[in-house]
Amino acid sequence: MDDLFPPFAPEPDEPKSVEPRSRRFKAVPVRLIIPNMITLMAVCLGLTAVRLAFEGKFEPAVIAIVAAAVLDGVDGRVARLLKGTSRFGAELDSLADFVNFGCAPALILYSFVLHNLKSLGWIVALIFAIAMALRLARFNVMLDDPNRPEWKKDYFVGMPAPAGALTVMLPLYLHFLGFEMAPGLAPVALIYMLVIALLVISTVPTFSGKTVGKRVPREYVLPIFVVTVAAFGLLISFPFEILALLSLGYLVAIPIGANQYRRKLKAEAAQGPSVPSDEASAG
Image 1 (cartoon, rainbow, N blue to C red):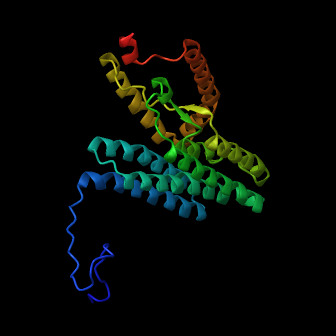
Image 2 (cartoon, rainbow, N blue to C red):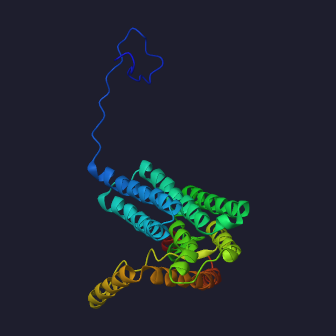
Image 3 (cartoon, rainbow, N blue to C red):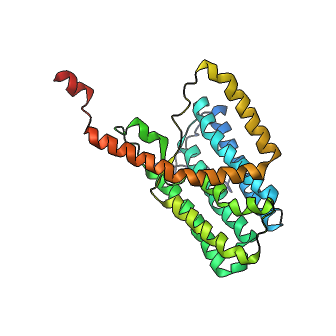
């Protein structure tokens, strides 16, 4: 059996007569495995959502995508908390996002209503999935500018992947709330999906809130706990009502956030280029 699986010898210049050295790899810390396990669980949820959609079980399919979005927001924070970030984890997270937020929502919507438009509906589903892949690829190659102002960290370039996946399923939320999605409304769903795909790959600044809430005043701690519990209870009791309201609110907030971004950009341009601290002290 040893001849069937010979040891891998990466040194091509080593003489064949010399027995290849046995390599001993260090054990992988558990803190590096936990974030990747969370990411893989999110992938399982995304793939399960596709299966549920093909079986006509659209409500649990939507819940699976929402749960995958929650895990997507958790894995990165867990990795940073445990100091378990790695290049492997970053690449795995990008592939998981493409499956969960690109392929899965596109297939769910195609199975739900876009199949009534036949090839045209499938083309738009492909456009959405490819737009999500392009966005993730652009996100991976973007380099952080060390001179970037602090306020720009509050904005994404285009609609982020989880928000795009949850927002594009608005026709499903409305259908669950009693607004019948008849085959005649399939063109409306198609146009809506195409608009979301364009927002995903656009350069429209969208509010991220990454730097909000790093420090919370003590008097706000208990009210925040109460509001969080109330919001969680509402989401559990009225999931599709809350998801529909969040999707509509997010779409309304996009032009507001873009307007704020432009105003801050104009204010920064009016102040002129900032002088580095070392040059200012030298002056």
